[in-house]
Every structure is written in C-alpha cells, then in structure tokens.
Length: 342
Image 1 (cartoon, one colour):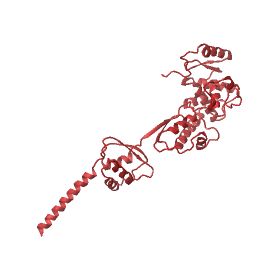
Image 2 (tube, helix red, strand yellow):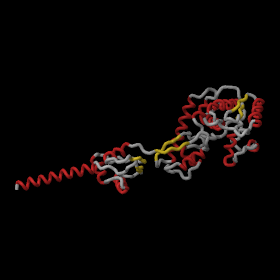
Image 3 (tube, helix red, strand yellow):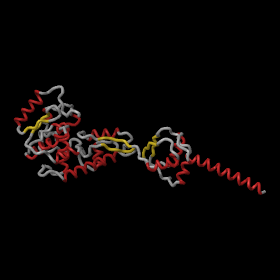
C-alpha cells in the first residue's frame, strides 16, 4: 500500500511538472508575426473579441491564454481606440503591456496660408481615415460648427494637424478655430498704437490681404504699412485679391476693368472704401503680426517687380513709372508673382 501511495505521489508530481512546463510554454508563447502588424481598436471593442480576431488572423497563438493572462495580471482594460503598429513576436504579457502604453498611429492634414476655406473643406473631405461627421461639409456647416454668424472665411488657423483614425472632421475644425482665436488674441494684446482697426477681426481681415499680396515673408510688414496708411488717409485699398475673392467662381483667371468698376462686388476695394466684409484667405502668424505691427514709412503704393518682390512708391507719379517699368516693359517669360524657391 505504501509503495502504491509513493507511486501515486510520484505520478502526480510528474503531472504537476508537466502541467507547469506546458503552462510555462503557453504563458511565454510568442505571436507569430515576423513583421509589424497594424491592428485597429474601434470604440466598443473588447479584449475578448479582439483576441479571437487575432487568433483567427493566425498570429496570436491562443485567445484563451491572452484572456487568462489579462485577468491574472489585472490588465483586462488595456484597449484604447486607435491604430497601432504591433512589434513582431511578443509574449502575451508583452502584448498586453504594449496595448496599455503604445502610441497610436497618426495621420496629418494641412491648411496652407493664403488658401481659402473651400480649399480646407476639400482637404478635410479627402483626409484619410477622418470620420466625416458633417454632411454636407460646406461653408455654412463650418460656420455652424465654430459658432460664427456670416462668412467663416479666415477663422481656421493654417497649420498641420495630427489626428488618429476615426477622429471627427468637426473636431479638427474646432481645433483650428480655437488656434486662430488664441493666436489673434495674443497678437492683438501686443499690437502697435494708433492702428485703424476697431476689433481683432479687422486685423484678421487685413492679415488675409497681406497674405495674398506677397509671397515674400520679409515684405509683409511693408505691405501692411501701405494698406494701414491708406486706411488712415481714407484712401481705397485698391487690391486685386479682394476683388478676385468677391468674384468667387466667376473669376476665370483674368481680372478685367469691368471687374474693378463693379460696385455690386462688396469685396471690390477699388470702389468701396475701408476693409472688405471678411477675410479673403487663411492668414498665418507672420501675416497677423505684420497687420498689427506694420512697417513705418511713407509708401502708399507698390507694384510687383516680377521676381516675387515689390517696388514701393510714395507718390502716384512714381508708382505709375514703376508700373510701366515692371508691368509693361519688363514682362518676360521668367516673370514671377512669388519669390523663387530657396
């Protein structure tokens, strides 16, 4: 009887060792993916559901073992919404740790200085993996999202925005609007004295004009200076980009005299004094700063020289001479309205 008991104990010991070995092997079993795997966690996903999917995909050895490990390690709530690049050959505990701490895959979109809200809407509509929660996505819808009455042009800050898969279009729009509000408020606090603006919005309108008038960053304060002096002297701004904006889809690329004479175009600064009704483009920080810190001087006119820069004049006679020199006699094949790339 004693021998039988000893034999039974030995067998049980061997079974315990075997179970321990098997359990240890299963516990430390690694995923079979030889390369990184892109995994996606959606809102409402559970570890149990995803583990079964991963096992069916062929790279997770055991969904059951992963669930057991999560329970024993108190990591059942490791899933976070997003996409993740899973490294190859992780053990179950390493996989759970990765899920709890990894940074999700992100995507980017960009609003460019000098472009319009319609351009930004196209960028948002075509953004990869961005949830289109606004239908239809148009100018009116953007105004409603950011709480603006009237034309929302210019109220989104031009910059690169990073987002995760599934993030909403409306969230990007609100973020860009908040960025613009913050930038405009900060710049307004340090503005120069005696500017012809009643509100920060007036400065934003001016900044958008400056943004459209020159591609040379160093010229922005000078351009702003010309327009500020014109406002102070009750002169018309007479700037082509505002007229073009007012023409909208009717502009075919050729600005004609009839366009400059059109009083019905509220953005026609050749016929209407003061600032146009709204910004005409996205203005970046440099243009906003230029509008609020215009360069001193006496120049009231400027003309494009054809190399991306401008010639500034104090008198109309000097300006007309510069127009003849740079716009009539010097038109060449290499004429540029923007500076050459550095």
